[in-house]
Length: 458
Image (cartoon, rainbow, N blue to C red; front, side):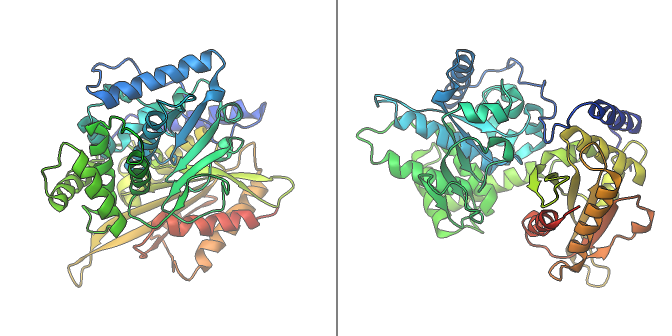
């Protein structure tokens, strides 16, 4: 049964044409803030508890200081633009700690968590909504500062603020690279950014929240007098660690140790650690799967990660590249479009990439199917490559870039991709493959694509 939604093909095509016309006479704004006018509305229900009150007041104070020209007093704690629960919780936790651990100093720190997703995109991750509701935050996420609520463009704001702290992300997006990197916490590969940052923590754990919470607790316990730690924040921390570690089943020893320390301070202190974490993981995982109501455009943007990539090309020194991760097959996604046909998928995709200014996009799909011989379920992955021609690159360049990235994907032996069964129906600069590597979808594909773009010269 096909699921319809309000994003029509006509609307998609109109958006593409409008974007092209608008860009014809002005430089393209790459990786702009989509839906930038959709800031948080006044909450229908104001949050209950210290954590919600602090977060809301902190946001208010930042906007007051910006209005009065005091942006330089603030530190932005920011995760990745995918905005998952781990990234969001890490940012909120460290911002809270920075402020409260220095509140008795002569020069207390002003820090705020910046979620690098638009406000209206937060609910595209139902597990985030559940965790925030459990932490008694205000409705409509009005307690949180999101990308579309910034009163100034990140490129200029980066030069004005005191600095940034990176969590769950090893390197700042291009628009933030003029800001000093004060600290980094990440559980991915060290990319070499922020060598002077303190603390600078790279460690393989299930959840980046583990690293942030460990540092927070270590510093908290050394203070002459501990500040108030709201149970809502502690329970948010446990939720992030639980979903990333599968209820501690996939946890490292550090994940377990930190979760135990946090649990003992929370309102769940009487619970058995593994039972509580397993229960949290199951509830959050169930919520995370609740995506059937989303249309294709929302699926493309719910876990979108993109940035500018440098190339050796003198004509096009940077290319805008973006990745989406979608837990549905290509056929399932096509059924979510208005017409339920292949062309409509690419029309919606084109409208979305026109809006965010992406030259090249890669959709990484994953789904499970039952093997007809064994009867067992197996995971299938798909890679959808699209290169658009716009103001930034002309048709000849787009053809060359497409061929470069296509060849890099097809020759990589670790992927062993096969053309999608409908590949013959695809249009210009479009390709879909399948592969059966079940591990690390974006972590595996992104370096391959980025290396190809970085070597492209035309």
